Image (cartoon, rainbow, N blue to C red; front, side, top):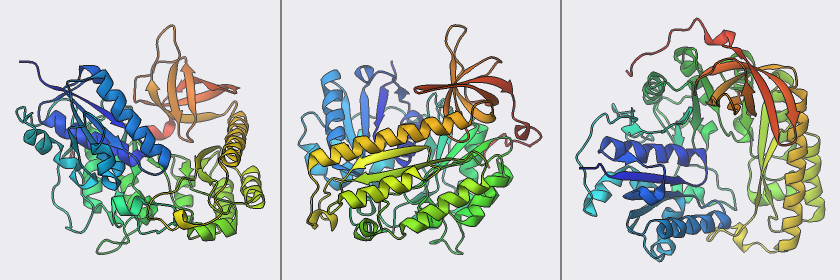
Length: 458
């Protein structure tokens, strides 16, 4: 009898990608087999985002598209939009079950309830064991298994939820209060992912820089990083996004001195205007942001820095927007993620006067995206002729170049040498063009030798 197939669709952040891997891990553990084509799957799970109104619309569009392509599958919808407005998703034709973030790890039970219950398949192929070995009841938990398919990199959740109360954001309501994964659980999960062959582990959370403050005894992200680097062997750890005030001097110094910590960081800006930052209830000012970027750029060689920016927040004038443009133009940022503000129900920002006209928002968004492209090109041009470490995303073939991601977050087309998917290599940047960067594989990074590597989970 054919094993049932499943397909997943992930919208939104890297934490959602980890959550999807946990869902996939549970399904493979239960005997399901991943299907590349949603039209061929018996079960499709859509993991949604609700950070903006566009994210909500994208979620609804994804659900409709899946149902059009596969009229017979069991269609499950979860994630932040499902947590925030389950009714809107249940109203869509063909959705079999909607469930929120807290029920994501119940996906197999939900399928049992719907009458689709294959045999339990402990240790199914492709599933990496992250079995919970006990943790504080108040800390965030990890799933029993994760499944990243053919990915070269793995994500590892170290924190969940957020205690900030930004006036535009509903994420604290759909993800809950800030909760950290106990250090021993993070250590065990790291060992399991390394033993499964992943050479780069991306640490993720809602507010990752808040890590450890809620634990007993309290700890910090810097302390966790030091313990992870002490046990990760010839492999790379990457931070994703940190709030400006959580980018400590200790983390900056660690990034400068430890080659196994990727020299890349995304630091949300949202606005370069202090007046708008106050209205957003952000806990920093433009001078704080500038100082953090300056410190990183000064101390960490060739660091890749990115920012999130919100355009069209209520009350944003031309002068406020010029403040944002000026800060970014004078910064070492290499890329921007630009979002148009949209009113989220039950948030303070949704009640503010001074809505910015849609045409103005679109013009400002376009201007920032073009600025981001210019900054990115200038950053990549400064890398020409340099040697960088990279993880291979796709080894390519004799007729097509491969792809790799450098430690400072530049995707490059690679040629020369021999490289396998997921391996760590040194590359020399040989060409920079508006739409791509080319590089030549040189060999193994010197830092990726001479370490003992874990061979099995704890």
